[in-house]
Length: 225
Image: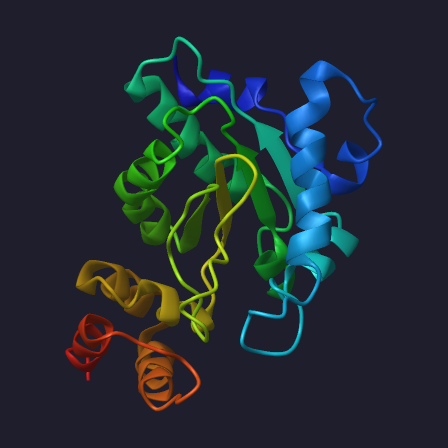
């Protein structure tokens, strides 16, 4: 199975089209997640620790029709094939318009992995595949029902919990240093993309009293200054 054949087989559907799909058994998960993206990502949350919606970029991404959803069925797949499907998301993202300019920051692919079992496997796959995305200037995020990662401003808030396992691809942005600060390798990829602006962002992050960084994160960031 090569990536070209995977790209042809994988269908990215704009969220505006997903919500119009008929209510059938084979559309249940994709429609559920589309509605969850609208209801959760595009609205404020009392435990978020800041004003505004949970994901500031999602409403604009949806308006621009650059918020896509796809579903990957993994039953019977080897882990190698599953990883190829994850890597295929990277290629699909890079191939999708817009490819240049400020609007690339609003591109988002939400991929559904509802038959990954146990669901915590999505976290392991995310950890193993994330470096490939960072190397291409992209972020790979994981969501699942029991995700224990806390929020930046409220560690008791669990922002990465979703009804079914998800992997989300978007462009790496300057503020993402907050999400990459636990690994020197990840920060190195961030600096490779942003250069001097990246070092400035690190200093700002270390001085941001509203963001709760752990000792390891602080140590990693300081090592780059």
